[in-house]
Image 1: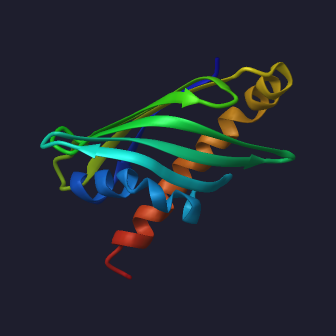
Image 2 (image 1 turned 120 degrees about the vertical axis):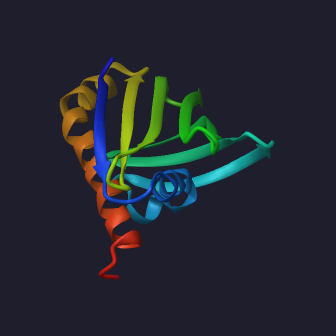
Length: 151
């Protein structure tokens, strides 16, 4: 199962980056291969927001959609995503945001994905590292677009 972990340094506050990543309905505007994202139901309590989200993904000739459980912890600046249903065998995505000494933040990002279908699993394995680097770059570009003082 392909796994990826990294730390992304942002020159923006934890709150800004956490809110940007938590705004999943905007993903089709900037995230590569994301064709749509729909929140199917949501719940909010004083500590966490949870919901079921459907995401459409287009990659090369493949087009799929899947449902995931999303948990956003605004107090501790964490976002956790797990597979609910779809063509995937496994999906786990985690974000944790920490302050830096200079007013920016470090985003700890991890992603694990496994397809049920063997040909898709092989295609994913071949493109996984490039794909996650594209995702990482998309979030950096989005943050700069939203929060740069030049805008």
